[in-house]
Length: 170
Ligand code: 4NP
Image (cartoon, rainbow, N blue to C red; front, side, top):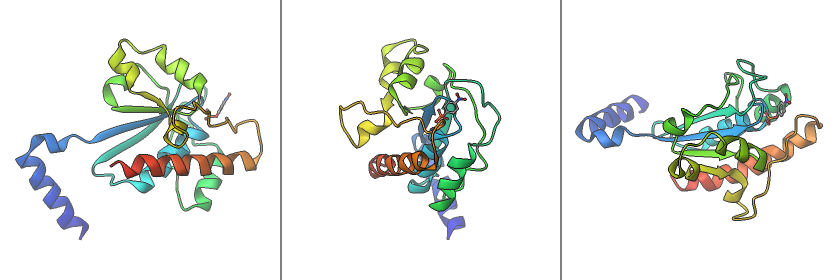
């Protein structure tokens, strides 16, 4: 019944142009190959994608255009989440205009993103993702890049719980 659902959505959107506005959520880490691609894939698997747009980016530019890290791809696959179509891109100041919420993976990402913000309303969009499950504790999603596979499994579990909280609100 996907076709009928889509027709109903189109009809309602024409009646009410405000309904066209999707919530836009951006996941940000350093390289955009390990943590944020997983966060993007996990959240996409939990929400109605006709209502919510999810993307990811890195504050660094080393992996622009690249596939996610093979260890992130593997842990995603283990839990039925395919992140292979994603490609790395760098966070830019325009993302503050394009997204409603910017979830950063750690405090260092937070500093790098906030350094590009031009005003308080942009700054308010930036949140540490693990504050979704540990409110106010400002805990980092540890960077698994230089570690082993277990690090990726742990990252997956943390992000899965945080994305459950996010998805419950939509
Ligand atoms: P991510 O991990 O920020 O979770 O994508 C990293 C990936 C690459 C690098 C650092 C962290 N790097 O230095 O290339």
